[in-house]
Image (cartoon, rainbow over all chains, first blue to last red; front, side, top):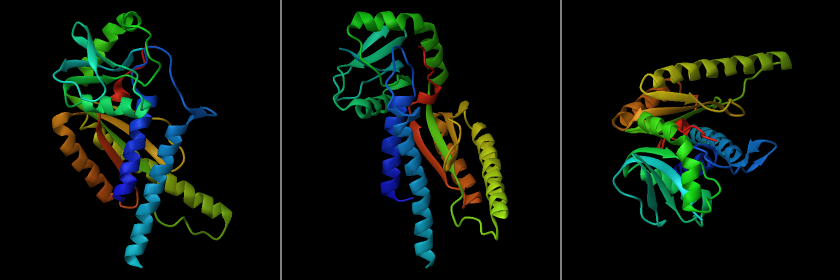
Length: 63
Length: 203
């Protein structure tokens, strides 16, 4: 994985954790569409992108 | 307005930058401050920074602020027994997150749709078997673990592991070993994090 991809994932995971995990004393703030958390979606896309980046890096290396 | 970041035990120092203070409930301290202008990002950064200055950190989910300190106290008091218990559970520990994505490489090559679907199903089974094996291996190095949201899309498995601070390097080495054994199976490991996955919602 490239350093940039890793940094993006870490930053979005930080926000995902802040919004979706932890003790809840009162109320909740959720950014979602059709019950799917938007930050969570972004994290999935980035993880998938990182996997694609890895593949491309491998293909470039053997080309 | 008062923003609540986390509950801590054994606090030695507070991170600088967000005008933080504490409100004590006996052995449990609430880390509070003005509402952060940078929202959830600032909240997350403070929570993670607390790991450096406290024996136990129980993150609070980013949420609406309390109107007064009395409102914070009244909301917290009913949950103190649970908060104390949870803080003892995560004391001296951090969280490590592990995700396993679908296989990298080319999609299965097949002559027809049925054999293509069979190949896809076989691939998914193999990934799930490897994820189960990885989870069992990693769980053995952790005090506690959670399998996160149901797998969907490219991410087939998400695990959260409560690991003693001194065991994080050994845990990371085990992840590297597992990744080396299955190079076509992307494993993403992040952390150490404050143990948010082991902080139960009280409301």
